[in-house]
Each structure stands twice: as C-alpha cells, then as structure tokens.
Length: 390
Image 1 (tube, rainbow, N blue to C red):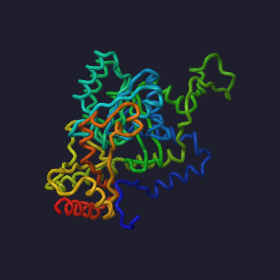
Image 2: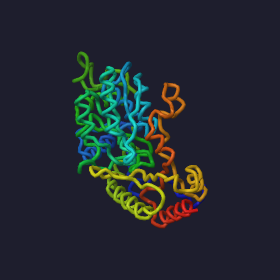
Image 3: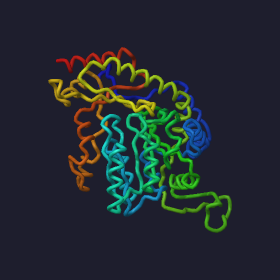
Image 4: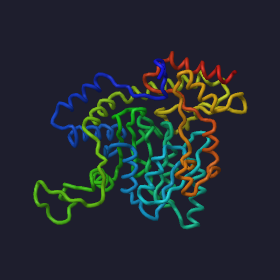
C-alpha cells in the first residue's frame, strides 16, 4: 500500500483509548465483566433507550434481534437491497424467507412509497412480512415515523439497522431511542463512527425483548431465578431456556467502546464538517452529492457521490479505478444484495429493483473519517475534478 494512501474510512485511536484497554487487561475481568455493562449503559444513555445489549458484531445483533422478535420458519423478512448482506442474511439464519424494498433515489434508503405499495399487495396475497429491517444508509435515518405507522397498520416488527448511524438524529432526537421501532442495531467495526475492533449492540425499550436478547447472546442461558422453570439449586445454578449462541463481547472491547463514546460527538462533528466541505467543493461537477431529508441529521458514516455518466467521457469503472491508482481508497456501498449469486439462486434476478441497480452503476464512496485532513480532502477533490473534466 502506498505510504500516502487515503482510505475511505479508518478508526481513530488515542492514548486514552489505549489506557482504557490496558486497565482492563490488568484487571480481574477481561470478559463477562463490569466494563461491558458500563459500555451498554453509556450507549443507552446517549441514544435515549432503556436497555442495551452488547454483542460480538452487528451481524450477531441482527441475528438475535430477528429471533427475539419471533422470526422463524415460514415467516418473511423485508429489508433494503442497498446494504451489506448481513441485513438480509439474518433472516435466512432464522429459516425465514427474505425480500427487498427498492430505494428512494434521493436518500438511498428504503423507499416508503415502494414499501406502502408492496405491503398493500402482500396483504391481498396473504404474505405480509413478520419483520422489516430499514437500513439507515450512510448515517441518515430512514423515515421512521411513517414506517412505524405502517407497522401498526400491517402488524410487522421493526428492527432498525443503524450500523452506520450512531450519533445521528431523526426529528431532533438520537437514532437508537427506539421510539418508532422494537430494536435498533449498532455496529462498532473500525470504519464505523466509533469502534470496539469488532462489535455490535442492540437497543430496545421493551423489557421482554431485553431479557430474551441477554439469553440469546450467551447460549440461551439464564442465571436469574425469576425466569427459571422450578426452583434454583443454588448460586452455581443456571438453566438453558432456548437455543442461543456465543455472541458475547469482551471487556477489552467494551473498554475501548467506553473510551470512544466520550469522543462520539467530536467524531460526528468532524464528519459533518468534512461532508459539508465536500458538498461545496464538488457542487459544480457532473455528479450528484448526497441529499439529506429535512427530518434527519446524518452522522455521515459514508459520503457517496453519483456520477452523471451521460455528462462525462469516462465510465464508472474507469473513474473508480483511476482514483484507486492515485492512492485514493474509494469504495462502493453497496452491491445490491439481490444481485449476489447466492440470492440469485433463491430466485432474485437483475431488474427486480431498478432504483438500486441504477444507483449501483453510478455510486462511489469517497474517503470520510475523523482523521481526514483538509489537504487530503483537497487532493481527493482535485483528482475527481481532473478525471471528470478530462
């Protein structure tokens, strides 16, 4: 890799983060200890949710969220095709069917108009979804109030995939407060807003879901006598109440998360500044800059442009690869899930969701992270300008 390579995203680790991790490493608890609960409380307090459950990844979080909301054999999960495969795979893990709702061409989130039409048709056919997973793409919340209204009308559960969106707001309140959903899922992968290395979290306001998520995280086991069948045999005793998993996070990771949470607002503020700066620097070029819904304040996990291919001489692939050759680590979020070979084997085909397929043919994710300097950002913009004007 070039020494001056500019990635599309990266973590920011400071001495306080390192000290927090070392302190846990030198303590009596490096897993299943008190730092995990401290991390959960910090995130729950920030987002305004009653309960939080930290797990090993956002994929693990999505899986047990589906199980906790009752998704199973014969059920159907709907989600956006503009996401990482985990948002759909979690339904398959539960033995359910999966389907998609095409995107809004402006926000790149799941289209509410498409959702309304698909729900009305599904009701007539007797095949309504059990669970909907709206994905807050790039850090911008979906239109959750409208989704919640539809969930009440049609009876499906809502799991927000907010893997991109911690630190964002919807209608002036933090993403993750679960006002319009049953569960919200967060991700702490290194390219996300804050990191625990690998890790995820579930937020909910429903105690029954919380208790189930706690068990599913750790083998389906409880040590709480309140939930046991019969009396406890003693302080050593536990019962497995359902089939769970080892989706636990460590105190080592949680210590990093607690430390990173103290800088979350700083991280988001910097990303918003850089996104606004991109908007200004790119506005006169033959491309579309990200549009923001007035109800949202994005946390800007990603900054995605769309090339106006009819106004430039180069192809999408040429622009992408030439930027990479110049040491700019652009990326593409996302390859539409329904076009993946595995999903094609399930019966999906190209052409099923035209808006997301058109988006995919034009989209490029530009570098955006806390440590991105204005000089590096200027370099990125200059290279884009040169390529599109050549």
